[in-house]
Length: 281
Image (cartoon, rainbow, N blue to C red; front, side, top):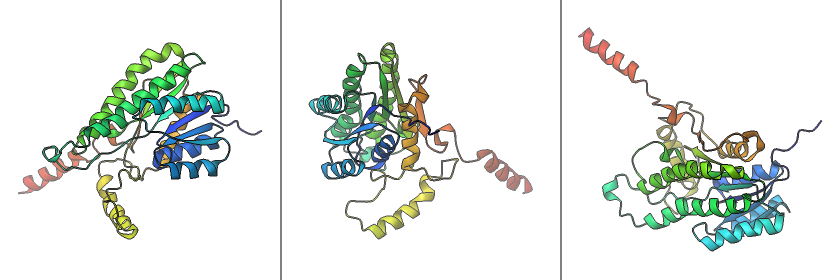
């Protein structure tokens, strides 16, 4: 007996779906039986992905920070595929990298906020307005451990991701009466273009050397030393999109190797080692 597909009969929208985590989610959703609308500002890669996946995947060029684009995106999904059960608000920007906040000129503040926060809010509202009268659905908002755990750098990004978490929990309460579930995924240390730390125009060979050199640095605070993958995050999205999570709403699911669970450094061992050295005199 063949196992049923997790998203059979469902229609999904994935924003930022042309690359990275979004692309992995699109591919997995399609594999699990969903009809998928891929939304992105990258028309070339979005169209190529849709063409490769076949008739059950369509591409729409859309800027999630533009209200009319998001409304048209939902209308397109309903018109072409007959409904909408899953909305994955994945599109996001990292913003300019500054080591210290005093060096941050905040020139990219408005664009990062518009994409990372306003774009999520627009996606949730437009999707929920459709879902509310048609049996409910699942809304999944991509945040980050940067929205959970304080730290250095990318302060605007951190602020938007924290805001997405609080917003998502709030609307999870508000939309529950319509059978709409709202949850977040918080990835960490997943290799994407956005967090590659490579300047534009870096040669592939140099980028690969940099990636290998930075590996131990970015995983230092992660208890599980296995490198997280795009597919790991896509699998989390599949769970939240499917009926397997029918009783789950208002939650944040970290995909982070245990990073937000606690400090990976054994400070007790460090203290004991220092004490032993001192007392040995």
